[in-house]
Image (cartoon, rainbow over all chains, first blue to last red):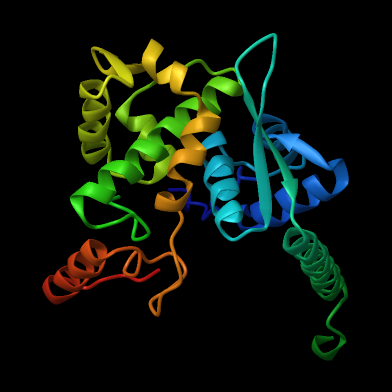
Length: 123
Length: 131
């Protein structure tokens, strides 16, 4: 009887969701202003597997923490839309997020190099 | 999933809080092109409030004329639309924004005497999460 193969759990979620606030801040820093669904599409395109509700909740929390501000923008073609932009605190948050992401990247690069390198002590 | 810790505990403020939160979600979704119809499950996903509790507030908004109910679905009424998101946001900005308190930035304990009393009562009766 063949032995069962232990498989690692599939991770189809892409990048960790904890990156969502940082991605939102950096998206707003890059684009200046964005609507909610635009931000959702941006973070999805960058590999975050989050739903629209998560983006809404993150934006609400970030607004309560005064990282982002928003205004309702009237549209002749359709309903008003909420337009988001960074506050000064949010801009500092975006810089902090960029630093954190760079640290994560460097840590992952170091880890991959470690795993790829042969362990000469065992040879 | 239950009532988020940041939500007010007294009935009067809770009703205003959830009216604001629900209508803001509905205006937001509508603005993003998703229509103006929600169900309790969607409210749970977007606001983190238990669907059963969310439904009581949805029904309350129906009673107040902001929403109309069609089976499990709730839509903005003409009255709800007329109020407009901006006007609503301005009118309730002070009520929906937590003030300084010794618990946390999100706690409503110091928003009003009613809130303080409700919070104390809740803390005496339950573990209170001052997230």
